[in-house]
Length: 273
Image 1 (cartoon, rainbow, N blue to C red):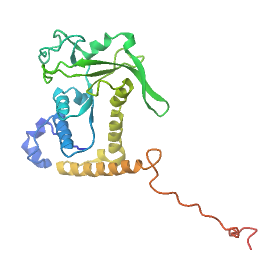
Image 2: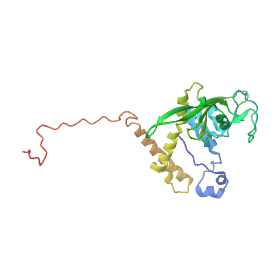
Image 3: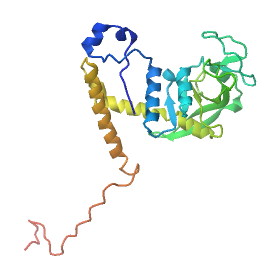
């Protein structure tokens, strides 16, 4: 959809480095979540299809990003860190705890909330077919209010908290927040959260198969030109892949089978005349 090289603050404020690498003057320091929200906003403005954003835990912890996606009228499934604070079940959302305050009354981390769930809250769910067998794990879900300063106190947003705790692990391994409808089925919620594997696979193929990770230059423009060509090539390959069964209908008709005349005799055959 979109991409941009992340420029660390040390680079953004270093005029010599910027001049040597050819960084445009219009480029200023922005955090990765800020860049991501700008790209999602651009996609909405130009009318690209899509109603759901998938966000990994590196971005999902940012409440401004999640709030921005909601303001754009999109839903999200966002990975989060175990220390994320939510209001305890049954407690009315009140004043948001100050940043860094982990012992605010009536709030709890999603990890502590998960560890306190009863055994019947957990279900084993399959979400897709793997290379050898169906992938499955144990999940729990519940409706929560996030204790964030970017949530309006007068209009608290209730969303899904999805937790994964595989068999054999000492504690839950993954957490997600999602604004998908309250009526969504458990399996569909898990399936949406696990769609991130497609993005990770695409990125891996871009780097290894198409050459995105092979750039050895030092220029801003050169990198973006290289990345543009890689992404265009990968987009073409994906579109071609979609035409190959079983992903899609066969694009070209099969060639008719040629009939061999009864009088034909292969050259060198003992029965040739």
